[in-house]
Image (cartoon, rainbow, N blue to C red; front, top):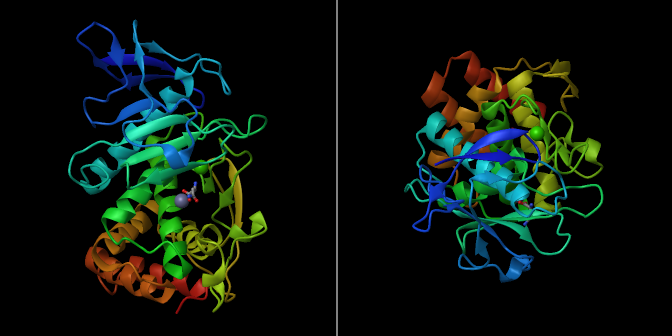
Length: 331
Ligand code: ASN
Ligand code: ZN
Ligand code: CA
């Protein structure tokens, strides 16, 4: 059934719900198979697929459009819709049928923990968990790029299965940042067009950014021998920086109203090929060439193999991928 959602982040939207035997509507997406539940503030370490309460509603009009809402269905509207956007991105861009490519939808939990300013994916429960933010400045972690990021952890587990430590961990995190961002570009919502800022709606002004990741004070812009010692959310910076340079090129540029300025680590000038092509290369690299132990040097090889498959070894695309890796000191 077509429900009306008063969302936190994207205004009034349509959401796909299912009418139950008793006539009420439930947050079960009949097209993509995911189910959205209220975790009732259970902590993330305790959540199982069977935890919490399925959202139901008598008139199929959901939420009140406010952040930090007392209406517990409001965050659920965003979570339910943004899971659908992510599913649709993978389906319509890569022909991928859900996180495991088996057509099965995940369970999505909102209101996990108490003032939990985070979100995460769990392979164990095949579920996503989103918290309520910090209770003051950061609202619920149900914005589109955040949810795309978390679902992508499931895609990575089902494909390359990049080990979540050292350089492979940074590549795992970057894969989630990259596709989380691509889902945002795909949805093209009027209130939040595609950008190269991560978690900019739920962690304003942003949690991470791609053009110069070190602007967060912790992420790496350039590869070095010690980059694998950083937390995976910061060693990811090298790949996010690669993704920006390959997509948009080096230097200053304003895209969808946001100003970026991306340096190179080797003094080169890089010309971008657009993020859709770079994402296609990354997806093929992830699903065909990367393994659990792929490091940065291996990612360069994997993406060049993918670029060769998609565009040819003498293409401008292949050359741009090579130049962007060299520009972040990965050879
Ligand atoms: N939001 C974080 C992430 O997806 C959660 C975590 O670090 N486990 O990376
Ligand atoms: Zn992550
Ligand atoms: Ca964003």
